[in-house]
Image (tube, rainbow, N blue to C red; front, side, top):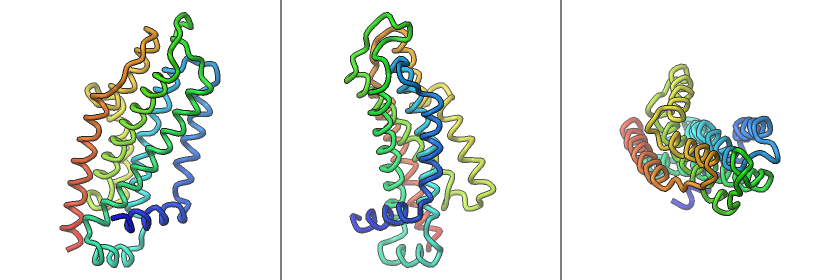
Length: 223
């Protein structure tokens, strides 16, 4: 599996297809996050943006190989393992991007509540932001796994499905991503730091289930 992960990571880096989602994410943060804003509000904003980026990175990773190369890798390592490696690389890239953004946002934000009346501990805020970003990265991976090959093979269906699923995952009540992000915003109003442990666990379970389903389907469609 280590060799497969290195192979997929090298494909992602060398293809430079990661540039558009990363640049869009950076631009999104540059517009929405300014120095001196309340830290928890800014962390919620940056975490939410990780979700569609993660889904986009999944689509890049699982469609990055020519069909002939994919067939060779699948024959050598097994289609499920090859597909899982692509999903893990995408999830890791999204989580890394979210972690870097969390550190930057925490460092430039004002460590106060939304009304600027109460101090917010920066380390606790950063930890909550990291969990929220991880939650969104995991759910974005799930969205990408279920809206890309082999689940949806037509780009005309896959891309709109990815966009709609990413939006719904962020706004629908009961979604772990919505719970994690709204928890940060609510915490900013009260000056308390909520740790989104349950949303992160739920996102991990959902991401695992989605990736398992996609990998199982890749075995059938590669047979």
